[in-house]
Length: 159
Ligand SMILES: NC(=O)c1ccc[n+]([C@@H]2O[C@H](COP(=O)([O-])OP(=O)(O)OC[C@H]3O[C@@H](n4cnc5c(N)ncnc54)[C@H](OP(=O)(O)O)[C@@H]3O)[C@@H](O)[C@H]2O)c1
Image 1 (tube, protein in one colour):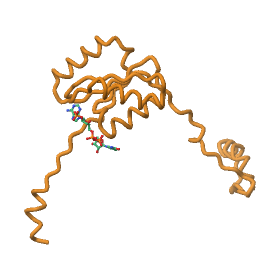
Image 2 (image 1 turned 120 degrees about the horizontal axis):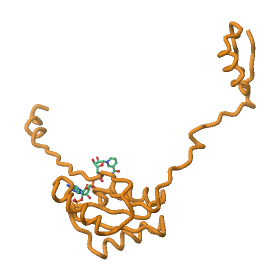
Image 3 (image 1 turned 45 degrees about the vertical axis):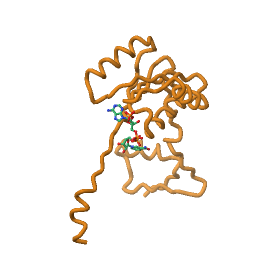
Image 4 (image 1 turned 90 degrees about the vertical axis):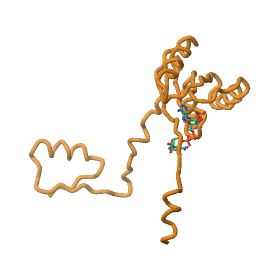
């Protein structure tokens, strides 16, 4: 039986791999040992400034959160796809809000129903005509949720 302090864990691993290990290896943990969280040292991913990020459903709740996230990670060009078109004032207001996060953000919008292929193809053409930097990310956050209570009401008398 051999005791090691926690700091020498690498030696223990090496020893173990060399097959010259004694029967028992004990790692001692004392109050002076400090645990490090490897994930705390991960660099936060930064997005390309010279790129365009497309957010389908970007006017919705999740879409807006994604736009803020993109802005905070260095995106400079965001194109929002939504079935309703965004007026100039509304687009400007949205851009102003995002500029509180990133001063250089540019927000564009294209009216597009992403469930209709020809409409999406038109949107792609519009995007090309806008002469923005290349698209490096497309985020899908568009959803329509339909909830029906009919089944519940039919059975509710049983409860
Ligand atoms: N909100 C959150 O924090 C959150 C978190 C986790 C997961 N989610 C999930 O994410 C999804 C979206 O939630 P949400 O809260 O963001 O909903 P929401 O506020 O209703 O937004 C949905 C957006 O999708 C757009 N949209 C719907 N159909 C479209 C289509 N065919 N083409 C283009 N755009 C379309 C809508 O705009 P138009 O009507 O103008 O097209 C709307 O702005 C849901 O599945 C939800 O469960 C949400």
